[in-house]
Amino acid sequence: MATKKIAATKSKAKAKTGPSLPKRSSKPWGQDGKALDGVRILDFTHVQSGPTCTQLLAWFGADVIKVERPGTGDITRGQLQDVPHVDSLYFTMLNHNKRSITLDSKSTEGKKVLERLVKSCDVLVENFAPGALDRMGLTWDQIHLWNPRMIVASVKGFGPGPYEDCKVYENVAQCAGGSASTTGFRDGPPLVTGAQIGDSGTGLHLALGIVCALFQRNRTGRGQRVLAAMQDGVLNLCRVKLRDQQRLAHGPLREYSQFGENIPFGDATPRAGNDSGGGQPGWILKCKGWETDPNAYIYFITQAPVWEKICDLIGKPEWKTDPDYAKPGARLPRLKHIFDTIEAWTMTMTKFEVMTACNAVDIPVGPILSMKELAEEQSLRETGTIVEVDHPTRGKYLSVGNPIKLSDSITEVTRSPLLGEHTDEILGDVLGFTDEEIAEIKASGAIGETQKLAAE
Ligand code: CAO
Image 1 (cartoon, rainbow, N blue to C red):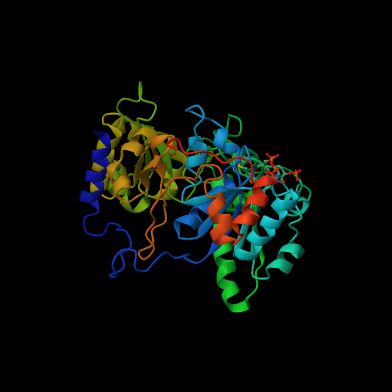
Image 2: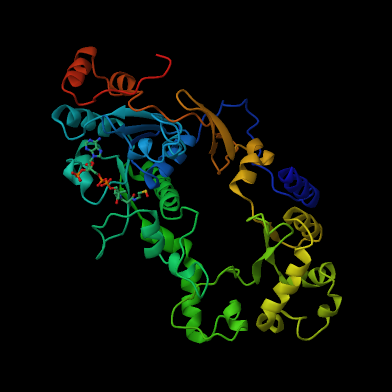
């Protein structure tokens, strides 16, 4: 199978110096607990950006209590459903390791439960539309009065400014954060990317902000507000494009293939197609089978220190001394011809064969891996980056596990909760309501019906 070849290439090429996972603690597994043990999160998130953040915190050991609206819960439970009446993969893949309580946070009884949740949690995470938390009565002043140690962390589409009241989804953020204007080909429209840099990217930013606020709270004893705006998160990830915007004032961007093709630059960073974003020119090249396989391609980087090895490999040893090709600056106006020539060579092999040949002499290349190939890649299963999870109503499915590995805080991915699955235990064990009080809360309708396990 093709994926085995990747693993073999890696271990051969990197046997001496290759990356390894952080070494585990010498203590027996689990004895050290998890990094965020003892941290309790009031998870008011929905859709993708907020849940990405709280899932990461849960993987690092936080007790994440997801508060959901009775009846429907997080809207993604029912979106893009592949199996009728079963929580969607959209939901299950973003809400592992959490507990779920249903609560109408606007009802009188619901507000009582909410107050107690605020008093017993360390962090409130939310990504409602602007103003929704305040409308629920959870203003910063109110929260701070109930629990001065509480950290209130929010994802919003925009930070303070003209657009602060707007609702935002992934692709809106990609467009407003500079990604779309710089992605795609020069002669085509702006493009959004498959990587969810607006949602998942901002969730990652928020998680870092929360951990920093927890760290600072150790000194100050005080909570604080944390804001990650999706526009800001995307722009942060597009930092190199703002770099290029400023370089434009001093002349054309010579590493863009547009320069080699004598096409004038405008006044804004252009779309760069598959040009490399760094100082080492690169492009996506066809490999054997490209006519029928949409992923039979490889990203090829003409890194300057290995230029001579590239020349030998592709059968152009004369380029090593030819003044038109020997130095990086001389190559810039000729990149198209250079990549066409390299492509004539890559098209004679599969992407994995190209990878093996190039890695043997330290030439960096990236095979275009499909989701199918990644799902089947054994090494990703072994590191827990791809995990198989069992779910009571869905059965087994694949998910992306924790991509961040800590040696003393090993992530175990557990399934997402059913809607309201933990309502009783949270009301009783966490919040200390008596049986009588729980009966009253239930009778008021504040928690609605909970989802039943298929086995019950
Ligand atoms: N009990 C009672 N009411 C609840 C509730 C609960 N448990 N949970 C949510 N609600 C209410 C909210 O209070 C809000 O009510 P009001 O508008 O009357 O105050 C209402 O449900 C809807 O919340 P919303 O406006 O956040 O939801 P939406 O589906 O209309 O918008 C989204 C979704 C994502 C566009 C919006 O939340 C948003 O812009 N969030 C910030 C940016 C963000 O995270 N975007 C990423 C989304 S992932 O692509």
